Image (cartoon, rainbow, N blue to C red; front, side, top):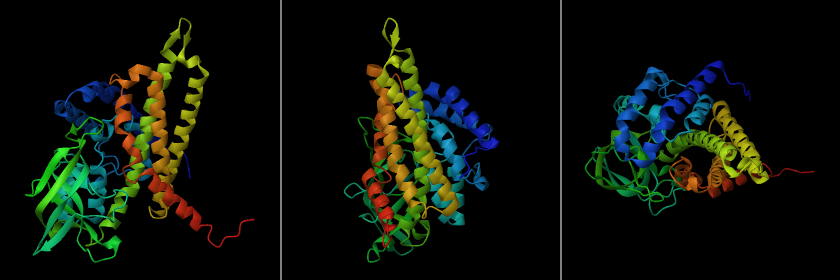
Length: 401
């Protein structure tokens, strides 16, 4: 793997870093303390600025208005954008739209692409992804109660989903539902587009996460599908291939998440070092003079660098040999980077003392909302078991001396 960053990518990431520092970080106090609807006009102004700079939708296809960056290039962009919770949304590469765009591009019909993909890439509409169910393990996507039963040319969708990010204000959902209950477990479900104004689509609530329900693009919805009728032409890919489609979405999506988490680590690390340098603990001493703080700084720096290189390697593997062959690397970064992020944010918060518990810095926000990183897209424990199984397969019939 060549670790050289091209001049083009150096210029792009430098422009993004400057934009995040100048335009987005100053908006964070309002983002933390005011309802989202008050920020949307200003956010739209920032999005227009990004489009004028030709940095819009970095990882999305050129044919639909994106920059067309490959996975390694977008990993570098995602790291820069991850320093602010506003970054990915303002640049048009936020979850869940980013993953839904990949699905529509790979599996959508021409009609689906014009109706949903193009306006989604252009930022004219938003979407949500509806897979996780309330009573069943989200880490096992073959266990699902939501059904889509054929009725003439339509499907009738019934079921309950939750943690549908950004469902509040979305124009459509991509729903995973059982269409072939008698088939092999991995061939039972399908992906179906359900417009959110369809009768029977009910956004029950925005789920409070550690006391914060959120709204609009920054929320997680609970959805009840009650005899929700949609045409069969809304299906994405072959019937029963929902699991296959989901894997195409989740593999690269984990790269996006992990590099965003590295960006969060970088921001928290910078705040920690600045606080240690400036925090006076006696007339002639600061926190930076304490050996335990110095040890934290050294450990966090090493952990961030290791996590970053692991993610870039996994992205390179996906680009080189495909997501299936890179399953072990994808699983490893998922639990390693999530834990590094949690450690770095916790250390930074600790160095800030009482200030770290407030919303006067971004750290408490990261602490609240990023703890879920060790749960969504597969819990740590699931990924560790998957990695161990793949490693042990390599030892079958192998003589070790």
